Image 1 (spheres, rainbow, N blue to C red):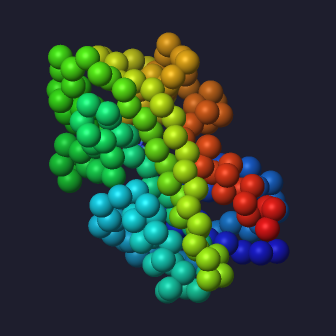
Image 2: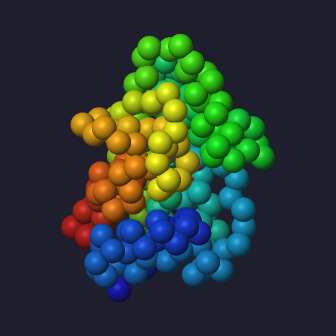
Image 3: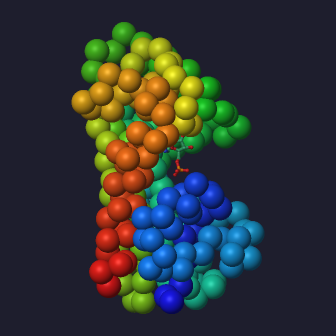
Length: 192
Ligand code: IMP
């Protein structure tokens, strides 16, 4: 069976893509290829960061590989925090710090439009492919809900009244940016 590496150590992400591709491919994580290196995300766009990670694995280990990167893009902030979402409030910050900074930056701002965007870069043979998943929504003025991670308590997806953190993982995983991008990748790989 064809082997392909997903340049991640995140067990949830690995489980998700393995479930979607339903055993038609052997998807290895970084631990499976004994890669313990910290791959630095020095890009200035999601596409660059995803490519950096995939290229590192392809060049060092020779496997076909894909990698993802996600950001929250807020319209009134010119697309910030975007590629810097995980470290919006500083290098050693946590999700609560990031949300506090976001709500502070948006205090009094009427335009609350935002979107989550996931980019997956695939390096397969000599080819490079990009897949994108987007969920539009808005940033509310306070945190609501306990589930999920990151900015989930302040993000309400379009067509819903609850935040991602209130909707819970089952609902979120059906409609999320990551799920949308992952389904496109899975379709591409299984049709190939
Ligand atoms: P990553 O590329 O998946 O590591 O995501 C980068 C950062 O974006 C995370 O550290 C979170 O701050 C934020 N993020 C990514 N996906 C989500 C999500 O589904 N909900 C909330 N925040 C997210």
